[in-house]
Image 1 (cartoon, one colour):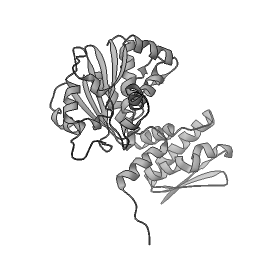
Image 2 (tube, helix red, strand yellow; image 1 turned 120 degrees about the horizontal axis):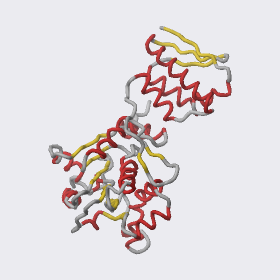
Image 3 (cartoon, one colour; image 1 turned 90 degrees about the vertical axis):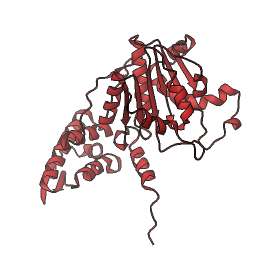
Image 4 (spheres, one colour; image 1 turned 180 degrees about the horizontal axis):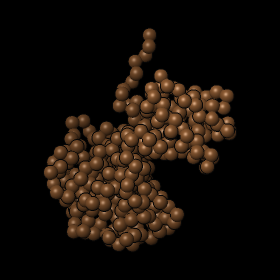
Length: 316
């Protein structure tokens, strides 16, 4: 057992360094299996020598960040942890150019880095992984970048209108009003990349299209960046129909989470089917994202893990 200490000149920075409810410390403890305590203006780290050395380096670097910026983000902690422990590579893909002034989008995890690289180098990419891993967000950003640089003529964002425990027919309004809630996540991502008025103009000029999957039938899309979101809720025939809309100079990204299939019982998911059928096709890439790639609120990773593990048994 080895122990090291880190002095804190400013105890007011403790909260930022430790995080709300000690969330930053908890990440370090869990990753390195060390004990971290605070007393009399000093942080004490105890445990096996290699782990203590790494934890000390991590805390020293985070302390410097707090002193310089006054706060820490979860991404700061994850980045320093990954680099010092060598358990995850730093993303190497450059920033994605979007149209919103001052806005910069870039991959934040190793999995997202692979995903962005795959889209930039392949014409057909499948991304499978849990909520919050940036499957749709990064694809939309890359589509905006391609439109900005005139590598494509239009963006087509597609979603199946499948009911997740709700009945479409009972929603108020006409058909467009009923469909809009299904397309809202795609529009939300788009509005983060392009200002509202420009999105509106681009949609009026048919440079951007946000449509339900059923509206794709019978079309051929040339020089388009086409994104299918929530692809786990397509049937096998729907997926085949969608993929065969691809025209000359086009790129397709298919994103989905196979743990959240809302299809009727005994209906095979088109996403599950296609990932096994297409794996030998040249120009196709599949990227598997995981809990480690979740970049939403810190609780999302814990929520995903809790559902994967199932309900805990009550103690008697």
